[in-house]
View 1 (cartoon, rainbow, N blue to C red):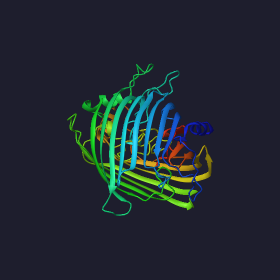
View 2 (cartoon, rainbow, N blue to C red):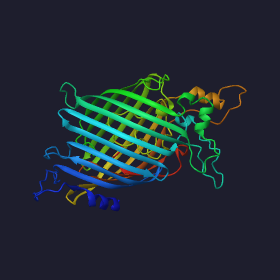
View 3 (cartoon, helix red, strand yellow):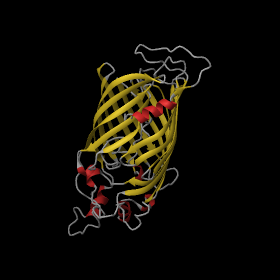
View 4 (spheres, helix red, strand yellow):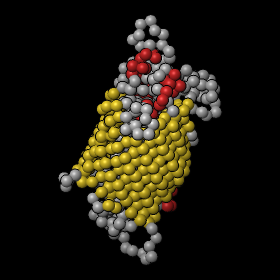
Length: 441
């Protein structure tokens, strides 16, 4: 964390001015930022599911005349990074709440490539954890991995709803191009994977096995009374989104309509030093058919994290295997206590250090191709020998707990470290560490 602080301090400087100006402070003693603020950073992180991360990124803020500080007029972010387990990211996004009057604009263009992308099957605990290569000496198992590349474009806008305080209507478009194949790294050539077994037994259909194109039209409502965007200390953020995904490109019949609901609340316990925060979320398909490679996508209008997939991993349940709890519908909860331990000023920036012990939970509420899994697994079929071990029984609640450490600059740039442990060994047995940016909500 000290190394990250020094790295940020070396680069996070205001745009040079022709003449030195006197610093202006707000009632909390924070330096009011004006104009442009640049935060180029070496990307040095660690994700228990992805490995060590390295690369570069840059946050660019514009605070205008400073009258809205710590809120910014607009923000841009560029990132190029790679993980040692074979994943990589090329990303540009912009968040522009005040460029157009009464309109918030958001754009995200990202390309992900992953040579070891986790696949644990469908429906949480219903999927068997059997791994035929586990425990074999001098052999690394690739049974629960696939190769996946994805291009993502998301554009969203938000406008006031007939002047009702804090209430807004939203609209957006999204496009995903997803390419999937078996893991193709050296050392795994002779291993049969769970993905291949799912394809061979028609749990994953042949016409969707290698991915495809997804277009989405999003409409929704957002209520937002938070005092800050990245580091809120009070207020409510509620989002209800209806997502239509017409099969306009591939024309394979995978059109669907779904909804996503998120409720986030921040309750001050002691001034702005101690905050109780929680998030409730649910997503379900209403009609139509969803291709298997999109059921883990969390369809939100505006992103808090780079990855918008779950359940499991650094975005939803820290400590549970990434993509370990996926189904056509799911629900989850995050509970945190955020303690801002100390604030200080360094290289003309406002800094805070915070701790956030947390508890995460989630469950599949709408199973995906459950009957196909039962058939392949032989469950409920008299005198039928299972094709392969793929069905383990009933779904249940997945839980994880842990603690995080945050370094916050100007209430907007949040460097994050989270350590989480699943409470059921079927969700993962190791303590997992996630280093990155922002709170999960």
